[in-house]
Length: 243
Image (cartoon, rainbow, N blue to C red; front, side):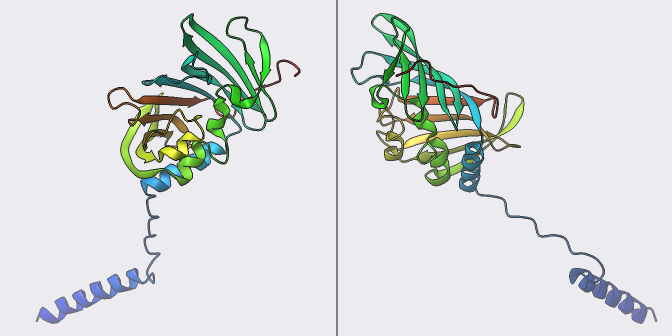
């Protein structure tokens, strides 16, 4: 006697499930958006970082010596400065030579390049190719942010990490050496270069980037570590002298 009642309940349950799936008894669950692949995430970080109007940066160099000049007199230890994309860059190169450690100040504008003499500290005008110009690292067509969008290969998500109290993506991949030679005055890119990238998980702007060129020396390879801060702050960059 109870079998027809049970069968009726089962039919009602099945009908309700079918109607719900079709959206008749309520809105269906939205289809989740696909999670971006690590390579897509790296490209997004490159694009977002490149939209900033200004940024402060520092670069630490280790491993095989990197010379600031073609004569090989000065080894670059570090570079720090401010980039104003519409104007140019102001940077300080800390260098070593047989005379000790010195600072070279650089102002790189669209049409002119200025540096201080490491001995007299007086400003002078130079041809852009006379000394390594850090501004090339941020060139909109071939700089590091552009390479993240087009040439960041074999990318994997290492994980989520804290950086200055904020959650960051940590990605790892590689960039072909030839692509980096053009923006490092040939100082990077003896072979494929390993790239570790950290970016703020909320803003998707780069916070840290490390390039390791193991082809330069398997034991002590050329390593460039870049850190970024103070995005979109007011930066005043002017020509220090008339040329």
